Amino acid sequence: MSPVPDPSANAAREVPVEVVAIDGPAGAGKSTVAKRLAAALGWAHLDTGAMFRAVTLRLLEDGLLAPGAAPSTLDGAAVASTLATLTIAIDDAGRVWLDGRDVTARLREPAVDAGVSAVAALGAVRERLREAQRDFARGRPTVAEGRDIGTVVFPRAAFKIWLDADVEERARRRRADLAAAGHDPGAADVVADLVRRDTYDSSRALAPLTRAADAIAVDTTGLSIDEVVAKLRALVTARVPGTRELHR
Ligand code: DC
Image (cartoon, rainbow, N blue to C red; front, side):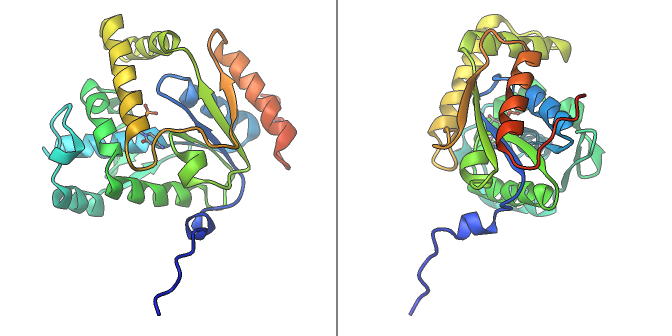
C-alpha cells in the first residue's frame, strides 16, 4: 500500500522558529525595511529576491537566458545542471556571493530585472532556493522577505507582514534606487515594469505572490522608511515572544 501523503510534511520540514516573514509586491520597501527591522531586533536579514536575482545572473552569464524570455523557452536540463553547480551565500553584511564572487552590485542590472520573474517561475529554482532559505534561518532568528515567505517557505513564521503601497509610489522608489545605481529608465518604463512583474509573480502556478491569510497588512504609501520601520518594530515586539528593542 502506498503511504498516505502527509499534507503537513512541507510545514514540518520548515524551521518553526523565530522568523518574521515580510511579503509584498515589488517596490513596497521590503528590502530596506526588513534590513532595518532585523538590525533593530538583532536578527539576521534574508533578502530572498537577491537569491533569485543571483540565479538569474548566472543563467544570463551562461547564455541560458535571453533578456525578457518566457520560462517555457528555458532549457530545463541545462538549468538543472547549473543549479547543481552554483553556490549562493549571503554574508552578515548582506552581500551576495555567487560561486565565490561578490555579485551584489550586479543584481539590479536591467537584464537581471528583465529576466528574474521568468526564472522565479521555475519549479527547480524555487525548490533549490526554498531549501537554501530554510538552511539560512535554521538556528538563527531571521527577518526574511520575498513573495512566498509567509505562504510557502515559512508557513509557521512567528509573525507575518504583507507590505504594500500605491503603484505610483512604488515606481517612484524603484526609480530612485535605479538612479542611485547609475541607471535612469523613464518613469513610464518603471511603472510598466512593476506592473508586468507583479502580474507575472501573482499569476504564476508555483508559490505566487499572495497575502497569507494570517499576515498583517501594512500600507506604506505616504510613509517614510523611518515611519514604516517604527510601525513594524512596534507590531513585532508586541506580538513575538522574546523579541526586544535594541534601541538602535
Ligand atoms: O524582491 P525582488 O524585486 O528583488 O525580487 C526579484 C524577483 O524574484 C521578483 O520578480 C519575484 C521573485 N521572487 C520570488 O518569486 N519569490 C521570493 N521569495 C522573492 C522574490
